[in-house]
Image (cartoon, rainbow, N blue to C red; front, side, top):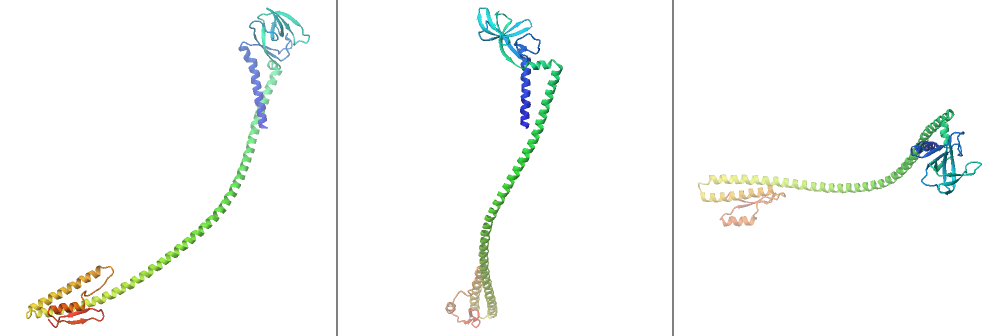
Length: 333
């Protein structure tokens, strides 16, 4: 409805502008404007009509219409024929009709257009009743414009409500689609979670196996360390015993040095050599990651042969616990 009222208001405004322009602008442009707005006017034109005419340039053409001004009268005729400066004019607008002969003069003008009913506006503006009607028409147009704006707002509100409803429907559809996608995603996520749990279980099983293997290795290493400690303790005791024996032998050698100085010196050197060899082997055993004890590195036969070559016959002493073989030079000293 608001659109119809707007169209109506716009049409009225456009018509009013055209009428006002048609009555006011042509006289300023040099166009003769004949407005029939008085019943006592001497003319053959209809009441309320407006005729526009311009000056002739030369003789009028046959069949054309001319405006002839005679005193206060304004008449429109049709040209039947032209003979020089004379022409025969026919009155088609009067009831009695007829033809007249007239010379071409400056009072004769060529008619461009005749518009009916427009002259009534001029008549209305010239009377009090007409001014009242024009004022009421203006008020009516304003009311129509206000109603059009009000109904436009109502229509916009209705459209907004419909849009909101459509948006709500769209949101509901989107929510349903989101729920469906969430369900689908949840299924996928469940599958992924199952796969992840299976992978975790496998990883935990592998880690447990690795931990068991490490524990076994650690147990073996601890047992080997204990064995090494036991062997080191045994060897330490043997070293102490040999040191004590060697210390006793050296003391005896010092006491008997005056009697056999050369033999004492030779035996002392041999004992020092054996002690140095034993100390070097101890250092090598301590620096080695995998400790290995071999005291002495010579075999029993090699030691006996060396003693015989030196002219000595020491007593051979074997330790059953450690498996170490020693040569006792105490009797010789």
